[in-house]
Length: 317
Image 1 (spheres, rainbow, N blue to C red):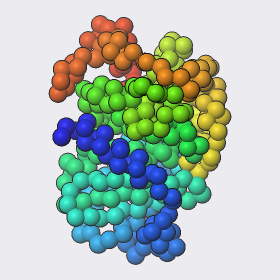
Image 2: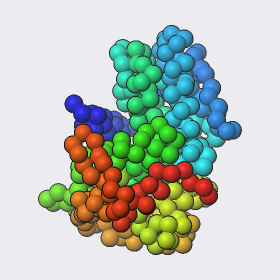
Image 3: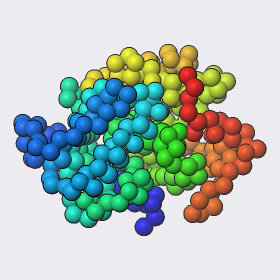
Image 4: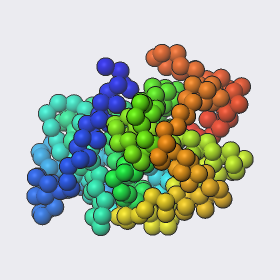
């Protein structure tokens, strides 16, 4: 199974898990008492309190802590800082290798639950996207269920861009992931728009297409002076992190005010109840992304090639 098919399968698993109510079963037990094995990871004033729910040897335990810090750093690069000052991260060690699944919870005590194989290697952690994905959920307010495409699509899109900006992915890996993944987010027969089509593909990849298109539209309307990154930083600055519950339109209006445009509300109004074909093949051509099967090549003479490169560059404002 290719990396991108595995990613799609894992996203499906996360969507199914997300249907469960918060803090049930052993998580409810966790909420009621502290765990004996607790570590703290600090990053620029943020304290990530890590709770190990099972026994884990010293070396793999340290690998987990290093992975958490690297993931938090990528999120901080994109947003200018980690979105919250304190977060609990609960690690469930399981038999085998790899990061298995994750779930983020908002509210007054934000928490992330992640299952990891105790035999995971450093390379397993370096290739993981789930921790960054869940951390990005901390950077946007909780929304009504019909807007799950926004929270999940945002996490899919920003996760890749943040890891690129942090140097944890290269440009080819990111754009190959987008080319392979975003085709799953296209509207199918019977689609009723993003707010009314809660399928796996539309929730994760349809939302990611929305974020890419919003990013490009903001850059177009501001002649490259502003981006989705500026818009999302403004939402955090206004208190729109995962402790808050907002109407989506409030977040979009704050985001638009930060860029001096109406790009995000315009796109939302066009896509929320209508299936819109984003024209991905033409978009890849304009961005200068050529799909070669197992990888991509870049045409830096394409009309949006400069914009593509700027998306992966660290913001200087």
